[in-house]
Length: 158
Ligand SMILES: Nc1ncnc2c1ncn2[C@@H]1O[C@H](COP(=O)(O)OP(=O)(O)OP(=O)(O)O)[C@@H](O)[C@H]1O
Ligand SMILES: [Mg+2]
Image (tube, rainbow, N blue to C red; front, side):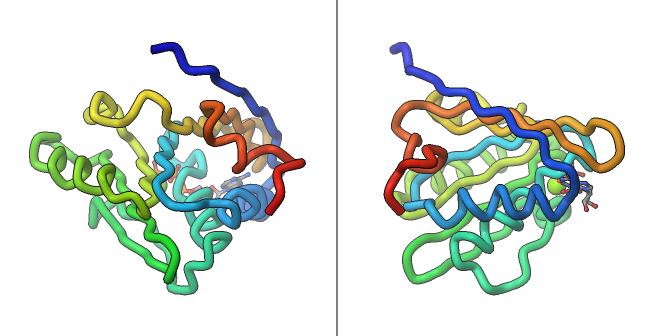
């Protein structure tokens, strides 16, 4: 099935700008969104999730799941399952866990280094690509299906 996709490109001059942009999306999360974060080591994927989680109302410290593989956060309205699959040698072990997170209707699933398991992510996920430019600037490209417009439309009521 063909999904209508939208594109959004922004240039974010430093980590604070990335946190603020992600925060503005985080406040609009409803639960159930699936976000794939794409970019090299140090591109800012985890930084983005930190802003996103704060925007969603997470008050605990949000950190990289690079060693834990998965970190979980929750507010009274939604949960965030933040995965980093970089160190996964056998994706099969994680497949079931990730599949379970994807089934939970109130869980936002954010995945860094999803490549080995991207086939189990829904096709109509949000893709956020971060590319380091000069200095601290990151060029960010967001691709999202129509149904996630409420996260990105400036005119959306929220
Ligand atoms: N514009 C920017 N956006 C995001 N991070 C930035 C920016 N400018 C500088 N940084 C810095 O770059 C680093 C990004 O690290 P982060 O852990 O978010 O990357 P990552 O993509 O998750 O890497 P990894 O693949 O190792 O998990 C942080 O130290 C952050 O402060
Ligand atoms: Mg990271």
